[in-house]
Image 1 (cartoon, rainbow, N blue to C red):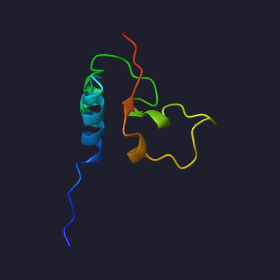
Image 2 (cartoon, one colour; image 1 turned 90 degrees about the horizontal axis):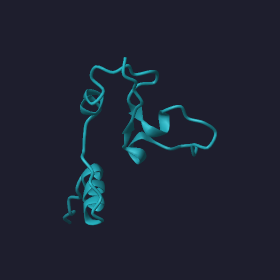
Image 3 (cartoon, rainbow, N blue to C red; image 1 turned 90 degrees about the vertical axis):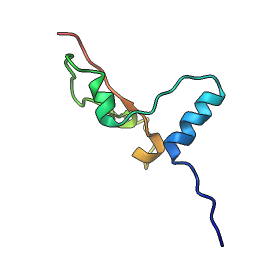
Length: 77
């Protein structure tokens, strides 16, 4: 029996955006953090978006792999 190898989830997600004419760029956490160089990053810094100041509206059991999008907030000092 042979299994068809699937593209990694982030790549499939980027392809889905591209098919809808939405610009997306895959970045590692380190690459995302580099976008904030020279800026002040308040806690929690660059994290998966569901972990950035979560509240009661975040579904229970939501995983990093399911979200797979980094977010952050910075201010110029």
